[in-house]
Length: 589
Image 1 (spheres, helix red, strand yellow):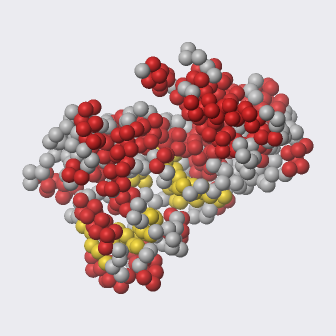
Image 2 (cartoon, rainbow, N blue to C red):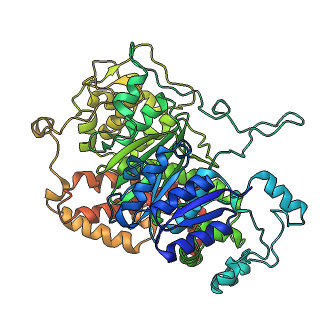
Image 3 (tube, rainbow, N blue to C red):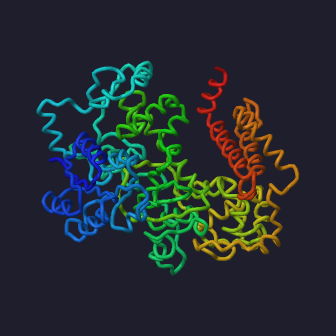
């Protein structure tokens, strides 16, 4: 049976686009142009999902949402808002507060809305319908396409001619994939099932999704303080549905608390006009996405060299027209292998989660439950590993002073505490942890562990969030204190770098280099440099061009941010033997 969708929209062009695209995906949509008609249709049709426009006269979209929620069935039906961004509801958080489940901008977000319908109600037809279609002589889902590089269905008639020719030159055969088996821009995406299977099933038994116990590091659960109520983590730290300013509580504290609470849901971070989300299953991050095109999976695939930039640009352009995603269209055309894309998805998720640690402005909201990724990614690492790596890579000296304490602070050990299985502390992290005896200051711990002061601060802050040590002030995942200028001055905090003589000239010269030189020249290492040499050069450049040590209102801040980003990219690429080899081949060509 086809699943029903009620569209409440008074703009004919938007309504027609939604009706056509949803029918093409196997759904049975109906249309109402006002709230009263929509409520009557809801009672008569009992739809599986509702799309409500916020541009209806007299606030009809929100009124329809309120009335639907008062009905018994309405409490269970997903409602998606569609607006211009100029109404009272402009964000996902505001939509949730108004009783809906999500918010999309029109007209550009119509494609995203269609792609996300599967998130809430699954594919358009149930299994019996698929079996009937197969019995009636329909082609098998994995039947080869009629011609190499061609797109199935009505997409082939409208796809630009340039890209199929380019793709066909690389791939002479392709396979079509049913919509429910394909992914979308943000994850391969959301639904109710996990088709992966880690262990062979018993003869005759149905496949079962992997459990957390079958995953590496699955036993992670940071210990609670003696006598602490587990519900306090939800009430005091996670606070579902309530915005937490990133200036007060960083993403690391939320992820660590979510792991302790074995949270199922997501963390949404709004910063700089971009919405980023991390989906969690039993406290483990299993997927991440972003509303910015430069941060989506397709951009990651292009950065990995799996798709040419020209092909991706054409795919993006066409995806915006037909409703879909660049990866979806490129996979359908046979240019991308679904297995290769899925393998790249893990690195993409890790990169997206780590990037959240760099955000200092904005808000984070925890959402319990809700849609789950259809293909969650087993990152193969302990959740605490992300916390430690994120702090170490993205925090600067002054930010660590505020979050944890200055170099003169004395952190305290937690007697008898052991690292949870699967955390896999690195040698320098192990040394810092063992050197924390309750008597040594941070700078003394750094000397004993033979690491620099900033690295020691970052490691100690990460360990405190994982409850392996106590912070100097005894804070455990509490709000960050305001920065005390006098305390920072007494600690000997350096002047901002842009106040130092000659720094502007240094930035200008390095900026010109990163815009024109290759990555070896950016890091100042030869082609045969070892991994240690690459890391040492990267660390030195990160200290020299640290955005956290430059005034945001100053003229050099954006330039230093650009330099730091390119230096990070160079380190990421040259640290990977595979990517480095591919890059050297490209330079040689």
